[in-house]
Image 1 (tube, rainbow, N blue to C red):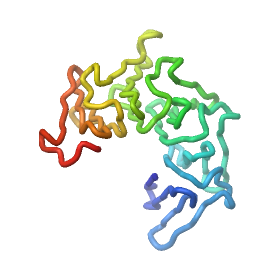
Image 2: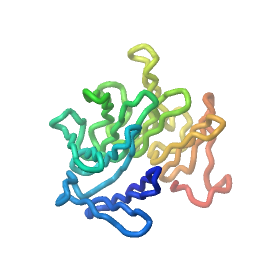
Image 3: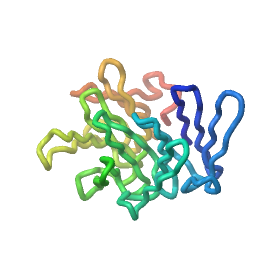
Length: 214
């Protein structure tokens, strides 16, 4: 599930089947379908630059202004209603990683879809990352990792990393960039892979990791 902190200290907790909870340091406030949430399974939460909260659920996306809910589903152009991850990029676009519909980029006016048809290696998304150079990294079940470079020529915007390229495992569940610019991939069964921009280095139980499921 998801956790999000606001600048005022409020904490938001997404739950499996019980909606989202806001904790102000003293008490909890609950938001479910009865209060206007689109679905009670809340997988991801993001606060945008304007202060709106976005909830990724099993029934689409909710935008919450603090007073009103706005819904975005497949009807409005979302690639799939089961939204697992949300990311806001440096240009103000929102990216929604879905369970089986690839990734949807929301410009504020329209949705742009990225699936296998557009060059993505997977149609399910477990993690999203924008690196310091503005590249988008995506990963999911048994599809390795896809890097998206919007500045590249069409047809060359996606670069894929799998076991063939040296990745420790194709089932990648998490991505993070460290302060040196290395990208780290946590896998299910293959430990961790570190990419320095040139090569992949693997860390498993053999190298001292306590468990290969990261």
